[in-house]
Image (cartoon, rainbow, N blue to C red; front, top):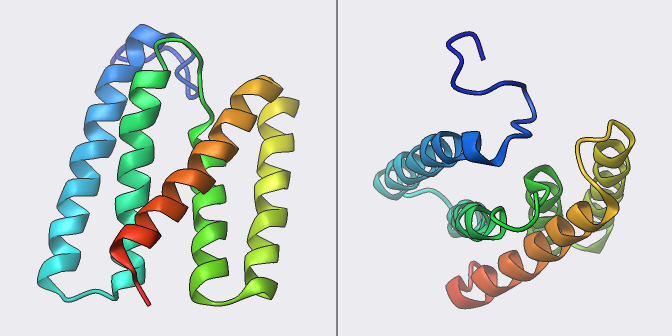
Length: 136
């Protein structure tokens, strides 16, 4: 924000989001490589892959709608908790997701449609990645 690359913390201007996506995706790739070399647990690697895929999906969807990546990330983490730890912990993750959705709408960072899109993307992408990577 100080250098004028982005105008505000929520990056409301769609044209300004490209560098943010590039930095996030490059960071995810570096983290994935680090996890690979350190033999991180497969469930953790699967979660990071799902975050990466959500990021790519969000980049393309962002051209039409400002999908809530906060919601997608928390929803994806909730799915991972369900799969890896169990229903009780996953339910706590789901409650965290609902609180995040409410907060993003309340502060007018997103519309209900945008948080719903993030919710669906986070859940469906994470389920698909976990199914393909079979972390357990």
